[in-house]
Length: 359
Image 1 (cartoon, helix red, strand yellow):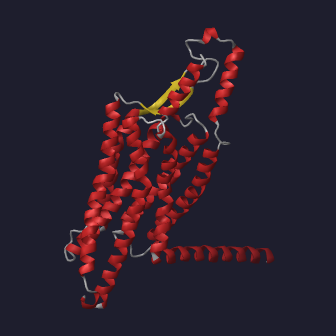
Image 2: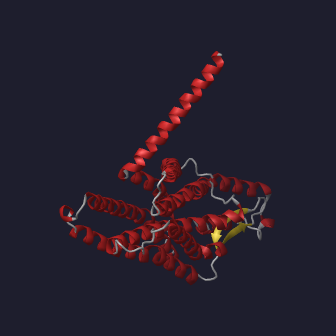
Image 3: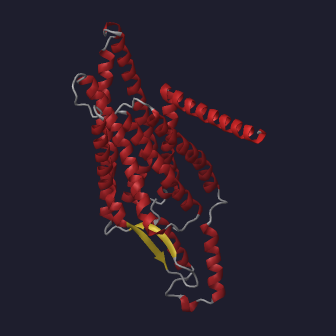
């Protein structure tokens, strides 16, 4: 999250108290020390209600996001007969896992402590990678929707996006490249800015340094359309056609049991992906809309809501595995199998140690 509002508010804080590099000669050391003590106390927000609430909300999101996405990747990777379309699900889990491991810790850190202490590289990289991960998530769901649409419209053709593993991998690479190109400007415009305050070490902030306000506004609107509105329109069109096609099919007249089983699986897949897409939009759309409004209007109340809508976006990384668990029986069975295997190995290891001690 851009710290520009904090940067300006802290600068005003010192200007109002006449503590700037230009006014150093007019203040004695005791006055400066008193002002700096007041400022440093305001940096640590651990005792405020808002911070406690956000930390309470972030704790389960981090734990479930870490464990859930790891289990998705492990369970799909463990399947002997992996279907190429499942690589899209692995890609989605990888993006969510990256958000959990990289973006959530730094977001929590900036909530607890008002300054940026993670260096110039992470200032540029964290926002960039969060944007890339979000874009890859919706691109993956868009690919799954298009793939399902093609499978119903052209069931015998080999034009599906996941018809081969090589095609799936190639498309996933394209997703990451396109997402990185969309978010590339963040690497350029995000940088460290420093408040030079007398009698104190430099105060560092991670902010976006746009040449003009209209550039910031144009880029925010571009991302809103490129990463949300256009993909959501494509996904909606695909699933509109998929829904109509599935409703027209009479299962009792569809032929063999194999055909009926395939149709049932497609209905379940369509339902699962639709729910994943709705969850994605509910989680990430508020943050992007509020960010765009903040760029366009600079409303004083918007930054106060941003930490909470950013948490909602990060919560998507934990919600995805939870929904996948609820809607996918094979995933539940795979996780239970892994848990049983760990227990058996632990028991065997314990028995071996006990026998060795006995001998």
